[in-house]
Image 1 (cartoon, rainbow, N blue to C red):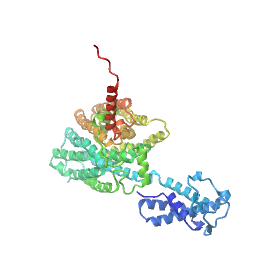
Image 2 (image 1 turned 135 degrees about the horizontal axis):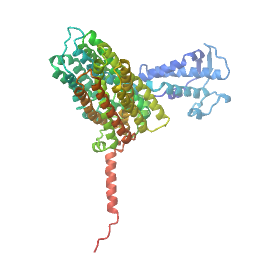
Image 3 (image 1 turned 90 degrees about the vertical axis):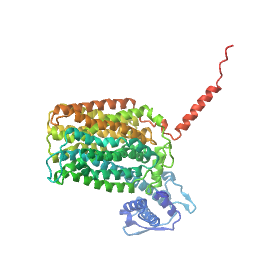
Image 4 (image 1 turned 60 degrees about the vertical axis):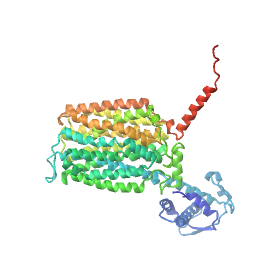
Length: 596
């Protein structure tokens, strides 16, 4: 929060003006925990400044007094009072000021060893208790996690529910529909018809105005579309498509808004894992939706799949707008230290808040080679991943022969693997980056290659293996789990190239990429005329594998991890100045004499 003082400065201010201090040594056992509580309470504003100051001061002084006596061989009797006058420091206890980095001369005289020890201990607590899990930036990341989770629950629940909607199994009082595979594919793909429309506008609005407010409004619209889907399905498959289009229009803002928030909140050294923490909400939402939808549809009826998801969506929307903010500069709970750390780490070329309206360098973005590499790899990702996501339940039903309950639970297994592997690979990626083992660009390409090359191998194996339930499910789990590499690969590369315009770039790549998300299920509906045919499904998996390989190869060759020149707020002005200087140089250069 603004105006927050570190406990080290607090202790120094008190110790340099306090009267002789009497400390009770029995507090030593609990002092560390107590001081931590004081710091956290101060950061969360659950106690007044005076209470925090007095509490933190007493705890630190008592700790250091007992430590000082123990280091000098004096016995410390619990409950005994120890008199430690200020300014008296035996010669054998004096330590150089350079050890603590603090000045030892004050108007009250030379500070004692306990003063220095108190401040060193307090600084240590500040560092240890100020770790990432106690920082507001991770609260914002958690909000992004929730937004991704509920959005994917709304998006994916139909993949399982549509099996129940077109089956005679389940409760008798629930409506069922005679939809063939072509209609089912059309309904599943209709989400993306609306999804691609709002990508670029959402990225532009999120970059220039407010990502949190935009995402909150869109989450409310998505909640309404989910709650009304059963009614729309009763009116016909066409109106069911309309409801899914509206859901897509609303959720088109999800990734651009999350990228806008990550660009403002994630220091480069934490960007990989913060991105994964936010976007693992997607597989988490898949796991919940796929595992629970089958159970709900089989017991209460498929309409309750949408009612339950909509209720969770409403709660999540309110929680998101209460806890998230567009940047550290405007978050009420962000401390000054955290805000300065984030803004300094991101760099001076990144706008800290939304008060400065940057002009989007459209021409520079659309003519950037790394940007086109991102577009191509995003298209390949969406074809392969969304083909798997929407068709796994149908494949398990038609080829592997799982019933509705088993179908939902087993369809969730691949995304459980994706969630777990995402957490692992994010830590590994940031660890090697911290050790300077390779550049950011190399890290992104390695992560993406694990996802796409590894996924292609698994899909090829799946296409040629026998219809063994255990083996097929195992291969699907590995194929989807490996896709977590994209979270530290192309998916965060937008922020690497341009933190200022990451949301706009994500809007562009996701808009074009989701054309593949529309074509994928439609192509599957065209190829798979008999859902029990293993040969037809083999064609689907081989096409997806080929697209994975081609797209990632382009990204490996032409992708980059360097911040692009057009990210700078002064890019157009600098470019204009360089052009003008070049023209001046040409005009001032000696001209050849004219021929007589």
